[in-house]
Length: 204
Image 1: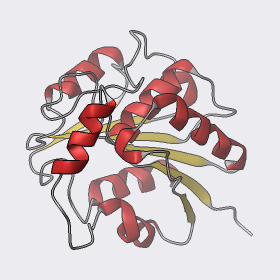
Image 2: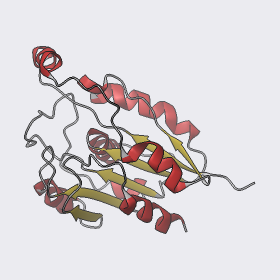
Image 3: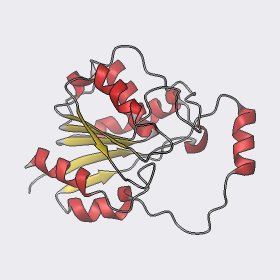
Image 4: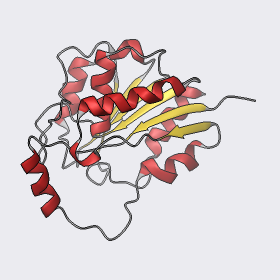
């Protein structure tokens, strides 16, 4: 029986400089009455198909995230990546992968690392990058952990400015970087065919 290709998906999150800022956010954030439909949900499962096993860790304190806590949780999943595997990180999940993979060594190389709209530094418009997620100067160790590296950004992203793409390109010149015109802001799309194509091209 053919082993499935494993896809470990790290969702996004939020960080705050202080607990007071976090409480203020909780008091003032919009109330949502409907489910949020995302490309990273059922769409990803359906489009990748039965040859893939998608693993979605629930990272600690999504709305007040701390890097060290995410690192502990992420590392608990690494022993289960026994087949060929892919790492995908969205938003804060993307910079988490950039930081972790530039500072640590995986047991074996990922086939592919995809970082979708990852912030690079603390120049996002509506949020402080805190909680220990700041990157170090040298990201080159990521190359030791992945056979292929892809980053995606969008011109209409109101959260992560598209200039962050250039900052990553400066640090990771051999990475594949894509800039789309319209992903409904911070990749708030229900379908993302481009990432499906990238994944399937890598594994075929």
